[in-house]
Amino acid sequence: MTIAEAQHDMRQAYFGGSPGVLASGLVWLASGVVALLVSPTSAVLTLFIGGMFIFPLSVLLCKAVGCSGKHSRKNPLGSLAVEGTFWMLLCFPVAFAAFLYEAAWFFPVMLLIIAGRYLTFQTLYGTRLYWLFGVVLGFSPVVLVALRAGPSAGAFLGGSIEVTFAAILFFMHRRTNAT
Image 1: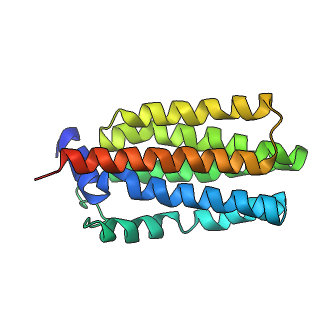
Image 2: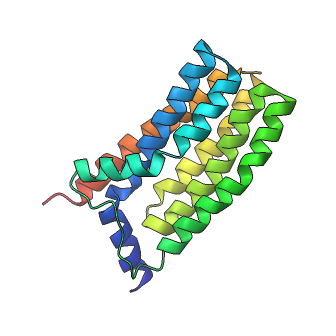
Image 3: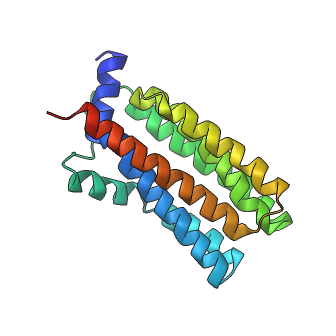
């Protein structure tokens, strides 16, 4: 399987990645609501626990739009997806340490972490929009810190960026796969 074939397999299996991005964005938005209505600590727990359901939810969303939600077992890019997930999980303690120092820093640090992960999605899916997506996510903490924004702002900004890019990715994939 060539890289181009592997990327095509990923795009077809996961609708260009849009369901996963949407699932993540919804978890981030839920964290924002929890930060406003309950507490920053509860918002961190919401993102962490909700994050465990992002992939299963994305598979359900894939199936809802007619995709399998599962790439080929022969796809060499499958290991990159798993490795990126483990790298992201290993970074969570850094975000939590930032939270212990300053609660408002948790979501900006998490935005940097997921920005790095989304940059690798260009390789997974062969879609250059993921580079822009990663850059926008990576720049957003600068804005949050400069404005001294609270925890809910970071969660809402991250969720809004993800939901916006999920919609763009969805329509791009649908347009390029129209029959």
